[in-house]
Image 1 (tube, rainbow, N blue to C red):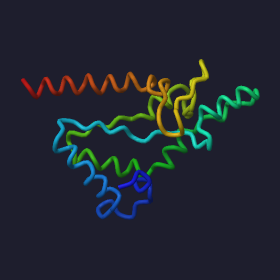
Image 2: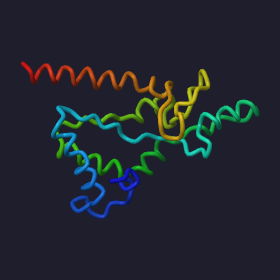
Image 3: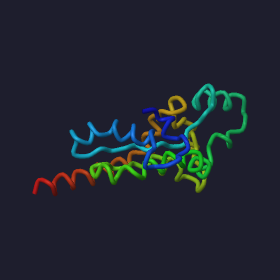
Image 4: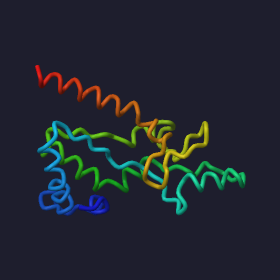
Length: 159
């Protein structure tokens, strides 16, 4: 499967090849794991040089930074097919835990997903897709909630 295929338009979910391929990809993980945590896609920069380099150049040239973000609604619209497919997974994998990674990235200002930390000017991405230390720090609380929940669920299963 490819992540790009998960964004293709859907004709019929019952016969959807990208969904079928992703399900087949997840089956061995599900069979050998108590839980699977799926980090969902999140808004990211498409700057050719990456956000950190673009941010640094703009700061040096004293250029505006207010466009270094995406609109949350644009992200949801662009990834509509992806989310429709992902919505099908819990019925197939009861041990799947979805991690809404866009939540923390898009919580600073309603409707916007910033690509950098506006208080210290650190990029949230090392390139256009992978989170930097600052980006990962945004996700810390949501990962902690998931792990705390999974620890409790494992304890419940053992008892």
